[in-house]
Amino acid sequence: MKFLDLCKVYIRSGGGGGGCVSFRREKYIEYGGPDGGDGGTGGSVWAEAVDGLNTLIDFRYQQHFFAKNGQPGMGKQRTGKDGDDIILRVPVGTEILDEDQETVIADLTELGQRVQLARGGNGGWGNLHFKSATNQAPRRANPGQEGVERTLWLRLKLIADVGLLGLPNAGKSTFLAATSNARPKIADYPFTTLHPNLGVVGVDNTEFVVADIPGLIEGASEGRGLGDLFLGHVERCAVLLHLIDGTSETVAEDYHTIIGELEAYGGDLAEKPRVTVLNKVDALDEEGRATRLKELQKSCGGDVMMMSGVAGEGVIEVLRTLRQNIDNDRLRFRTSEEEETWQP
View 1 (cartoon, one colour):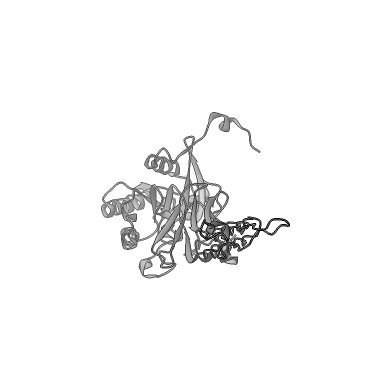
View 2 (cartoon, one colour):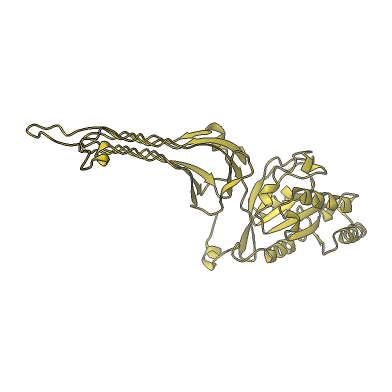
């Protein structure tokens, strides 16, 4: 399934049905009076966060969503049928923006959350409503209210606990594949990852979700490479895992490149809790490890961990550090029954 995180949709709620002008006509009843019914209410357009979706690809093939109009009223005081509502089923974490792509209408961050995007028009009154002592045979009825037409943008921000950051080929996809059941594409050339990947990682009887986004390069905030299009997927993360290629000759510059792009992106992304890791240490000797580690610690001014996603060295320690930075309400605790359950 192709990943799609931004799309444009056109919606329109249904218009209300018109009221009816009718009079009671029965044998032996000389003055039946008005009996025109009201028009039905038009259908509304809703958005609902549902389970089982992690992309907006469905909206690539259908962009127009028009609710049905309410039926007009009829004689014998019969009200017209209401128009059916339309529900846009979106993944959890979807933002709904106005046409300017800046005004946030709704942010669906919880499963089952619903929001009304366009309300259906009210049905018009039939002539029965206008009957009075001085007007016992009204010949007027209200038309139905028109529907609302809008152009909206849907933007998906994945719900993850940990976000992976780093230059291309820093080992992000390798780390995700080594610690979860996710199978991202891994190769020895830059920009192997072209769209975000999610993986569920388990450590010490707890699980959390890790998001891998395409690598950033210098000038990504200005549109270079894949740009910063995917940084929105780590805005909701509790902690960021910054991986730095230990085989690079410029680990300090690599570190500052990513930090500079986070600051240019804004949204307090650079202020999030961050775990800095020197990756691919299996390719370094003891002297090379010490040199790179000292240089990186001097640049970031804090603790730096060492890890090798391929060899598995230091992976558990990194996962435990990430777990400590994640709020308990985000963690998924395994029960003893789940641990004892045998799986082939």
